[in-house]
Length: 243
Image (cartoon, rainbow, N blue to C red; front, side, top):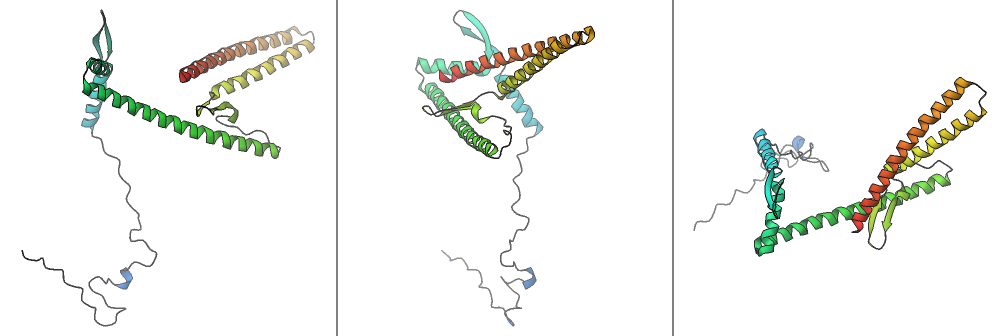
């Protein structure tokens, strides 16, 4: 078998070594300087994949079919469920009847869902613990400096960490806002009531104050209803997490 010819060795440049130009020796003005990148513009950014209109239509068609309602038998009744739900039920039924392929498919799917759920929960716990620690540090710094408490999206005391299960949860920030709003309206009602008692026997002024108190009490009742609704919803979510 004939040997491949080796590429010719670069010839030694003639003349002054510093000024010589040849193979593998570009002119000095075009050589890279020490510490200087050969690609000053940097690596080009990866372009996002372009999805054609045809592909978009195909994807939308698949989604429409997955969620299209189809009739299935449930005992003696016929119910309509999304096609995706019908497929999942079919796989479950096949696995229960003995299909190893269907059983493996569903078990693998459950494992993947649980893995993703556990990873998301771990990330949430990490984020909430970090928020609680940083928030408490800010609160202590404000107290030492004699400054008012800083504002937070989620206050440190609203973050709960179960040391036994490692689960972290947070109270809905809307509950704190409603609580503060309820307290503010209550203070305004009390202030208006005091003004009404001290007001002179001016029927017009008294009527204005009574109407103001009535309006504020209506607002407070609405806030109270929303507050209780959120509390009940949070308790329900807590029970579901513990189940």
